[in-house]
Amino acid sequence: MFETTAWPERLLRPVRRPGAVDVLLPAALVALSFVPGIAHQGVDLAELPDDRPLDALGLALIAAQAAPLVLRRRFPLTCLAVVAAAFTAFQLLRYPTAFASLALVVALYTAGAHPPRRPAPVAAVAVAAYALVCACLHLAGSPATAADYVSFGLVLAGCCALGGWVRTRALESEERRRRTAADAAAAERARIARDLHDVVTHHVTSMVVRADTAAYLLEPSDRTGDTLTGIGETGRRALDDLRRLLGVLDPREGSPGPAPGGLADLVERSRAAGQSVDLVQDGEPRPMRPQAEEVLYRVVQEAVTNALKHAPGGHVTVRIDHGDAAVGARITSGGGTALPPSPAAPLPGGGRGLAGLRDRVGALGGELHAGPTGDGGFAVRTSIPRGER
Image (cartoon, rainbow, N blue to C red; front, side, top):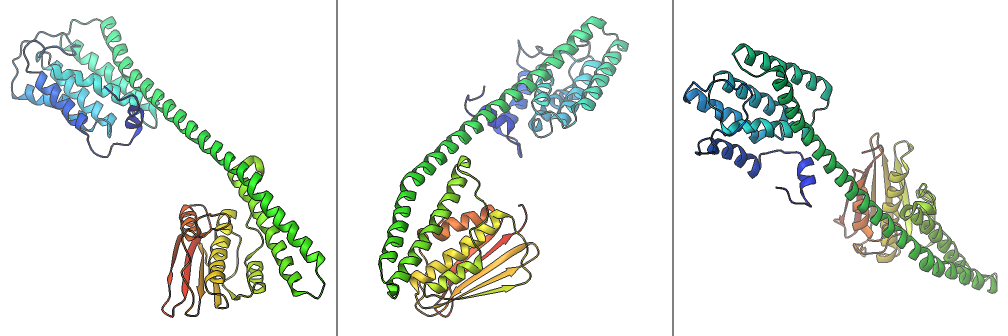
């Protein structure tokens, strides 16, 4: 009946509109109620004499027993109540057993597979309703004994329990699939972290050592020494960022922590590299969650770095708007020589330039836009919520 790889997800997936099976099942139950040989095979609790011929009311009750199954997964309890009421009326009116009465079994199974939020009160109401039905059938002259009613009730409860058991198995299967996917992702992150640690860290460390050594061997008055010193400092910051990224990829490597330094330090380093950068802050700076603070830092870093690469000597303005619910940033590079940054440009912590940052900002519930300005420059705009999404 179900595909082995898809039925758990189908069972747990919220049903917004009836599917083909939900429509065909009740139609088949009604149609089989008029097929000779199986028309009178179904559920019969009352065992009353079938002394009433099937008329228009009987046809309506047959349809009423099966039709609610169309919405059985969306409204399982309502479906069960309507089917049970139609089944009871069909029995009390002494109509001959119809194949459509099997809809009661289907409705019970569905109610078990989609339990209510408060199952105890619903179960109590169901037991009371079943007792009332048994009393009505007894008063109508049903030859069934108390043991028959109890046995039949246990069968009905078993149908509901079967639905609950199937749901439990489906949840377990889904949880196993999620754990397997999470373990695979964690293993891949750990592999990437090892590669970064073994390869990239080694090369960057070697670069820093060589730059420091060369600066030490030069004359104090040689301006090249200042450049090499700056290269060494940049390499050390790259190592710090790399260690933080290793903590993100593999928690065993440590916690990612807040963004290194601050925007003021970033602006000062950019000025030292020869870029004209102004930092303007509107509003009172307030604490942000570490993820949002780091992403904001990376957006400004990417925009300023691209301006340094594509429009050296041009003026860059970094404007930070400290709002109540979100922090906005607008980084503009003036001068007609500014070029748009490549979406694939390497970015510390992001790896895909603005494309990677757009994903990271979106994951926090914010937005990022980038594009040329009217004066030939380039602008990057972002808004990042302060609190949890």
